[in-house]
Picture 1 (tube, rainbow, N blue to C red):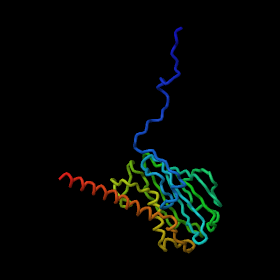
Picture 2 (cartoon, rainbow, N blue to C red):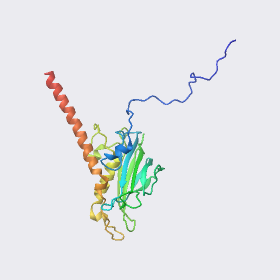
Picture 3 (tube, helix red, strand yellow):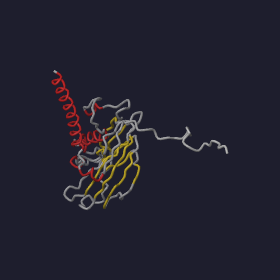
Picture 4 (cartoon, rainbow, N blue to C red):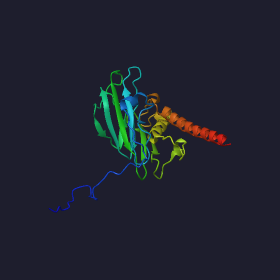
Length: 250
């Protein structure tokens, strides 16, 4: 009996296929519960990839403290999507396992119901999808805690590396830097530092003097310092290797 060919099988050239890995980003995995124990700051990227088109999951953890219960409050605007996942919570406004997409302009605080409760905590990730082409812009806004008047708006260019408009000179970096600086952290810290000025924190509408943002809770300046130190260390090591190679060749 003669068999007839059918369209069933691997010969279908029109089937959609996932492209092979390019090697651009090495696959990595992180246990978020272990990762967060050594995090230097809030919103710390879990992986060293934040260039064009990257998915950037960032870790954050908040715990109640009767002696140090102020977390501050501000608003973040982003032209790209952010997805929040709550990996565990107690006495928080978010539930364990809760997943949601933030609005482009959204409030940022501890999300704890009682910030003085030492048993209260939230451990979460916020994943940002970096722009693949075109500008990416973000802004940090501080508002009066009494009447909600806008006190400060810091807009910054968050266009990722690999897209025209990427500007590492904002934080004193260069196009050849190898250790990534997450622009969102740099921009948020810049706004918080500017907000330290008492004249900025004094509401022009109601006269209320707002409290400064608790930098020690966020740790953003520590992150900036350590990124810069890591980049300098990498350059120093390359320089030492080059000198050693040249001296051996002689």
